[in-house]
Amino acid sequence: VPELKTYLEQYPGGSLTGARDVSYWVKENYGLKPVISIVHGVIYQPPSRADRAFVVQKQIYASHYYDGSLAVATLLSATENGRPLTYLVYANRSRGDLLRGGFGGVKRNVLQSQARKAAQETLATIKSQLEAVVH
Image 1: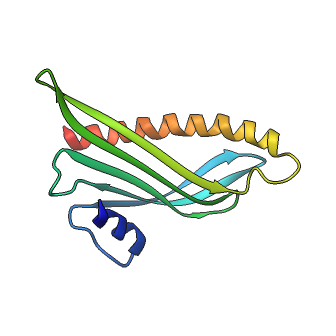
Image 2: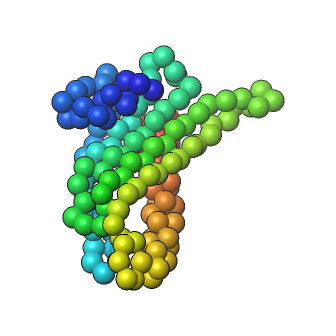
């Protein structure tokens, strides 16, 4: 969705009709000390695509470990044998410096465990938020 991409690139300078914005901070326990992050979240349903909705979380700031992060969840409506279906497609791309240095292997194991837990929590949050919008 080009207009959503442009909006995210220009934020906070631009606007996107129909988008709902939220900014929040998160404290996560990765590694030896907690990470404080500031996130910009957007929920957007393109006017031209009533069968799709997007939830995007873009990291604006992290106290350490992360260089950047972007998560995108897309809801796709479909039908199968006349029954309505909804698919949730989720992707998260993060870049950080946690795995550098002499203890990279130990850090990697901690990170994988925490990332799995964070993904499960994120998907549960997305599900509840989208169910609130739909109902």
